[in-house]
Length: 616
Image (cartoon, rainbow, N blue to C red; front, side, top):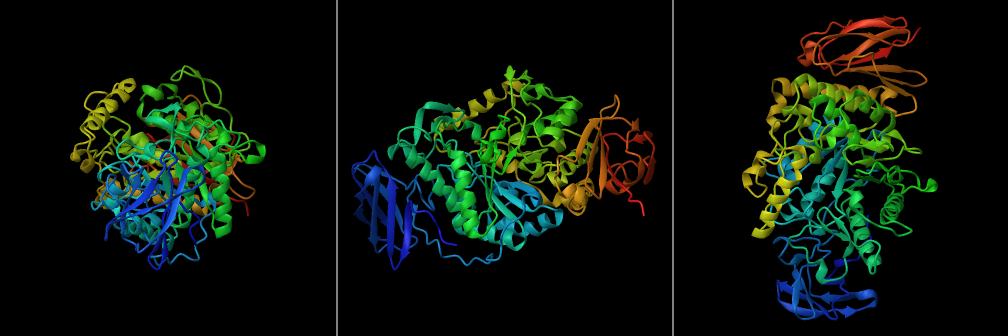
């Protein structure tokens, strides 16, 4: 695989390096080589404000800045490595200096994707790319098929979620830099795991962000929750789009990523006839075809706008998937009883029924939280395009204290949540540690060096939680202890209920994988509805050969229900109340013969799965 990008410092071999930077605001640009031998090499100004030139005597490892009009020294916007952090010099990297072993890897079919979102810094005590490698076999055995890595673009200091990145091409130095990331990706592919990278194309972080000195990367016409928006449709936007397009291609070609997760695309404002997101998806799909690999683009959006994932032929953008916040909110509100903030729009069983049937809960009806109508029906979309979750970095970390679901609901509630997630017709995503009920919080942490910025972040976090009533007791993001509290304790997965919960997830994934009616992710052959007047949900899915019924009870007490199983003989495949899952014992028999309806006694917060027995 050869790189298809050209911005930045491209090592050509034999001590030759070509530099290309878009800097229309500068008349003159020179490369200041600061190591190993200091010198100044002027670049030639070309069309549209690009400055370029080939410099001899520059080897991989050389450190450099760009000198703008003889006054400002700045790191390379397309820097491949920032070994001294966001304010230090950029480093020349040889893209071919890595021995890949994944030449036969072609990726996974979309219906086979099971995402596992992880934050490199808190996934292991070492907080590095390579320290995650010993855990890959365990993820494979669990049933995970795709590792989704939270953003790794160079950010200030060594502690950050990654959404304050300012060098989109540079893998974080404290995680192990570009070589460490390549080792992790290569190891994932050896274990049969796809790798997705979370990228941020809606804003850049505040500290170390020098793009304004080079060109009109930002626009004053739009604002995001994090400041100025990126310029995707104004004067100079062609070159801004090229910058981020090349960045996306860089991760696919040089790092062999299987796909990208696009952060908060609702914060990208682009009124052009060919929106950046549509162009990006089409470009990445073409590149995947040329490379002979399956490549996917998944977006995060809170707009409930199916245009993101509709085919281009019917007016969509053609992305492969979208996170479904509605599924999470509907399930979370039922499990926890929380109704503040955006949870005020949820809390009824019918909300979860709509999420299962439609992918969204809000498809054009009035939202009390937004005080307006919200969403649209997802016509021409497939259920596998909806990525669903019971937890993720946002829904955990954007609580004031970062509590995981394990701290909010009972052990039975955790098993119930797993069942709804994995037996749904959508693509599931786990947040690291969820599978064994990790008890450590995932809190918001930073390591900025600007005192004014540090205080602004502290104030902003307190204000953010006002609508939830969580503004008191917010941990200090800058305090190192906030970061240390957020690290996983993998030893828990071998203990008691944690071990049982992990086995329960593993069994759910086995059933999902081995039963064609579950693995097919066919939302057309599915029914979901409430059972009587109790908070009990029946999910029925069928194919030409098989049929299953999943029963989910959200009642916190034992309850008797008239279960409307279709007529026939049914075998129980899974029951979260059984002792093998550390339940209190089940009163539901192993086999049922169903008339029009039948009464069974469900345990509190129970998840059951039945399979129709085929007649001989």
